[in-house]
Image (spheres, rainbow, N blue to C red):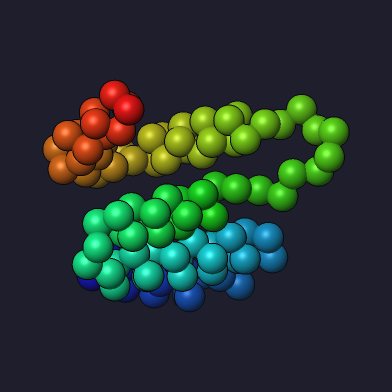
Length: 106
């Protein structure tokens, strides 16, 4: 359901976005769709991770000072700033906290 809403919003707004952003969102939404269509938790995790990376990744020009970590941090800060109702926070810590703790412990 949420994936349908995201795709619908993107389709109606994509002409407003730059070409690089449209490409990133196309890739991200494609991987998100794949993640939602599989029953295997491992495959779902991997495809969600790819979708997430596709959403925040930017083309990096050689010899810039921007690192992948700073891009990641910038993207997470943007999500947190836009997450007024704390939907992401609730999803992460209420639904996936056990998995996150296992991942961090490893």
